[in-house]
Length: 182
Image (cartoon, rainbow, N blue to C red):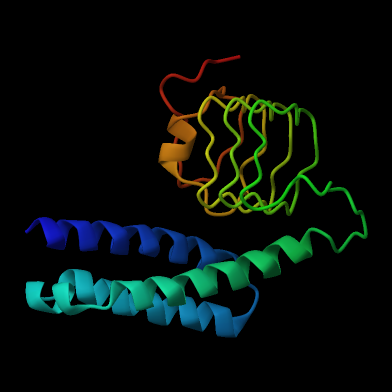
């Protein structure tokens, strides 16, 4: 039973990210791949226990990862279409940005996948199209930050951060109860 729970949890996480990717992609092929992967996962989760346990989750994870990265690249590229080379080289996947002052910055299209943003100051910044998959936002300052179009942002990431009701969030996420009104 514990193996089934662990597998189902990973599969539900993949579903969350695939839904986000499918909603954002402009490419019909990427959308179709996301739909196919979602259907495969939904069948596994809704099927019989032996089928769930026999599923090659690593292979499925690899396919989901590839699709998410492809969509991320596509969406982030659309934010560079204006010709503004506005991102510095420190803003990259897995970057150590702990405690960094990124306040009032236009970080549109940044690839912050897996970045350490612990206690980073992101107040008044725009993260539209930024890839935040796996980014560590513990104690990050998000007051008045525009996260409404950030990619792969999750409720646990928000719950670990500091923000306010003036922070713009995607419609499927909620303002954490500990965020203040200011």
